[in-house]
Every structure is written in C-alpha cells, then in structure tokens.
Length: 452
Image (cartoon, rainbow, N blue to C red; front, side):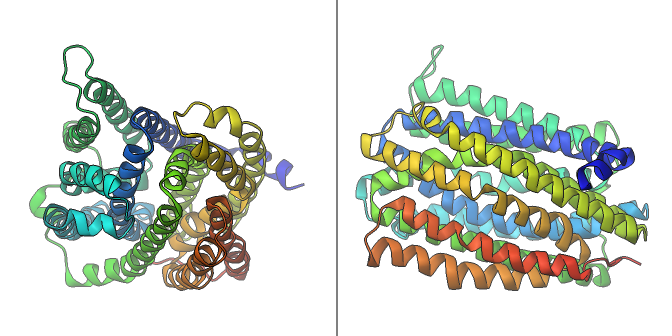
C-alpha cells in the first residue's frame, strides 16, 4: 500500500517534516491572527467588515503579483541551492527587489489618488466605500514594506531554512494582533481608533517584519546575506532566466488575483450581508488550508533541490508521496470543518442573514477542500518547480475566466440565487483543474533540471 511505502521512507518524511512543519506553523499563525482581526473588526458591524474585505481584495491583487515575482524567481533559487550556487541566489533576489519596488510604488500612488474609484469596482454601497477609503489610504504604505519580508522568506526556504521565516512571521503577527487590540478598542490608554487602528497596526507590523528579516539575515550571516552591490550586479542572461520562469507565474497570479476580485464583486453585488458572510468564512477556510499550503511549499523546495541536483527519480517518488498525503489529510480536514461549521460561525457578531449565509458557505468550502488542496500541491509543489509555469498559467486562466467567473455571475445575477450557490459555482472549477493538472503530472514532463 502507498501509505506503508511512504512511512517506510524515513528520509522523505524527515526532509518533508523539517521544511513543512515551520511553514505550517507560520500559516496557522497567520490565518489565526487574520481570524482574530476579522472578529475584532466584525464587532463594528457588517459594513465595517465588508469595507475591510473589499480593500483586502485589492491588496490580494498586489500580493499575487508579488507572489508571482518571488515564487517564479524561487523556482531557480531552489535549484541553484541544489547545486550550491549562492551568488546566483543573491542575484535573483536583486532582480526580485527591483521589480517588486516598481510594483509597490504603482499600487501606492493609485491607492492614494483613486481610492473611491477602486472601491466602486467592488461595491455600490456608499457606507462601505467611505469606510474603505479611510482604510485603504492608511494601509497602502504596506505596498512598499510587504515585498522585503517575502523576498527574504522565500530565499531562506529555498536554502532549507524554514524556521527563521516561521519565527519572524510569528512575532510579526502577534505584534499585529496586540496592536489591533490596543488601537481598535482603545485599551491601556490608547485612543479607540476602530478601522483606522486596524490599518495602523498592519503598517507597523509589516515595518517590524521587514526590519527583522534584514537584521537577522545579516547578523547571523545566513546564505541570503548578500552584499547590496553584489545583489544588483546580475547578468542579462540571468534576467532572461528569471523572466522566463517568473513571467508566466506573475501573469498567472495576476489573472488569478483579478479573478478573485471578480468573485468579490459578485458577493458584494448580491448584498452587504453576502460579502460580510464571505469575509467571516475566508480566514476559517484559510486555516483549514494551512497544512496543505505548508506541505505544498515544502514539496516545491524538495522537488526543486532534487531536480537541480539531477536526482530525477527521487523527485518523482517524493512528488507522488506528497500528493497522496495531501489528498488524504484534506478529506479528513474537510469532514471536521463541515461538522464544526455552526459553532465556528457562532463566534462572529454577524446579522442573522449574514450568519445563515456564512454557515452554508463554510459547508461548501469544506466539501471541496480536497480538490483545492490537491491543485495547490500539483501546481505549486510539483509542476512549477519543474518548469511548467506556462502550462499552469494557461489552464488556470482558461478555467477561471471561462467557467468560474461566468458561472458565478450567472447564478447570482441571472438566476438570483443566494451567495452560497454563487460560491459553489466558483469552487466547482477546482474539479476541472484537478483532472487536467493530474494528467499533466502523470505525463512526467515536469521532471526537468532547469539550471543544468
């Protein structure tokens, strides 16, 4: 049996565990703090919760572009580490810094000059828009802070160091939660700032995170501690290599972010209670996926290192093991989440209508969890490290924009169905993607050394 074969391979389990455990802890802390933040903001009512969620959709678009840039470069970094080429890792980091700074400046300027126009894309509720403008203008400073932590975090994981990002992320998020409590509710002598306090807490926490990454990296002289002039002294051929791997991922993540934004317009277009319900279940859903994000990201590092070291058969075996473990764990997690959906939603201060919607949304999320997590492992953990970013881009884009978005809008606006039916239409795309990506995985076309 597969499960027996996996547990007999102690070396695989040890390598996966060493990388995945810190990532899982980091993800759980992240989403748990997000859940706490959502509950604190939600105490001010559906309008405030909806405003924060809509701003977060715009922020999600930015973070997807940044994620695409960094993860595309880290496909190379993982393989460079497999051949112990540290200088090339430093050069890739320099390219990542250059591009993400340009993107951050663009998002910052747009957020400051056109916040109303941005939020009207998502909602026509003026109360939601007015609250959102205040939040967006403050939190836009994060556009210049967020990439630094992500670049160092990704490069460290590629060198097998997942513990440092976990510790820094944990400290950052705990600070964020503490500041939220102090600033939102005005505790221990601080003024009660509500929405403004939540935004200020996020900015301070991200600044703290960027400082910690730089300080710890250079004090401990980690492999990612590049001399600045060396970091930005990269060759044209390396830029071409990074762009070749990063460009499809950037386009993929950007289009995925736009698709997610399109879904948000569907939720908000149905009603404010609908977007509030989605805002409530989103962090819970993310916590449920934390295990699989950690395992998928760890798989990407393992596969990248093995391919870069020309250990192709081992890479194929590890990919098979990880996909099987991810699927089995997702089925069990989905069953638990389904059974606990009502007590979980009961923790929120939602209107009666939003609460009913949230319970049903969470049931749908639990039922489809296995497909979503399997897709994450296939795309992030296996296919992209093997140079299949273009294929993933094409399939994800086509399925999202030909199936997911049209079906959601059809169910919501043509048939006038409740938000949970629209959400079901959205997540149904995962089944289609899973079939296609699994066939590609079985073809073995991803078993390629990109830095030979």
